[in-house]
Structures are given as C-alpha cells and as structure tokens.
Image 1 (cartoon, rainbow, N blue to C red):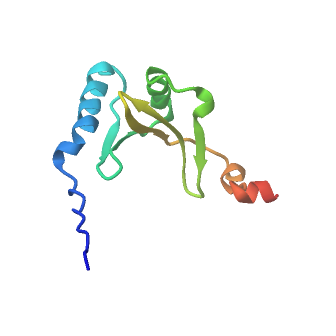
Image 2 (image 1 turned 90 degrees about the vertical axis):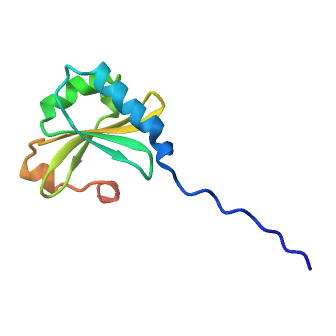
Length: 119
C-alpha cells in the first residue's frame, strides 16, 4: 500500500511583508504633506490601514489616493461614526478611515444593513 507524502506549506516569513512595507514607504514619500495618519500594517491579510482622527483630514487623503466619493461609506454605530473607503496603492490593499464624524441621535439609531431593507 503506497501513501503519498505532501510537503506542508512553508510558514509565513518576514520577507512576505516586503510589498506592504514598500508600499507604505512610497505612500509616506508621495504624500508627505498630507495630514499625519495613524497607520497599521495587517500582517495576516497583508494590507495597510490608514486612520485619520478628523473627517476633514480624510478628504485630502481620499483625493490623493484617487478614491471616488461614491465609494466612501458612512459607518455609524451607537457610540461613533466614521468614513471608510477601500482601495489599492501600488498593488497593496488599503483601508482609509476618517473618524470623529458627528451624527444626530436619530442617525445613530436608524436601522442599517438587513434591518433597513426589512423596514
């Protein structure tokens, strides 16, 4: 009885992050004059998260990254609201968020997603 042996996949390596870190370096160099964001690198999904704490700082980044205004989502929870858009920069996926959006109590309480469709 013959059995086949399969080599397990190689574990992730630090070198796998090269495209993400290179894109981050280029992002900082290309947009050095834009408001300074909080940046996180997701090493599992290999993408960049760009967070701005003021929605006014979101717009110059959205424009610089050539993201359509139609692709911006307003995310509202009971305690906060923010703008969110996804894109690619030099082949690397990124998420851009602008926090601190002010919404009314009515907006914060309104149904979303499947709840809004059912209403």
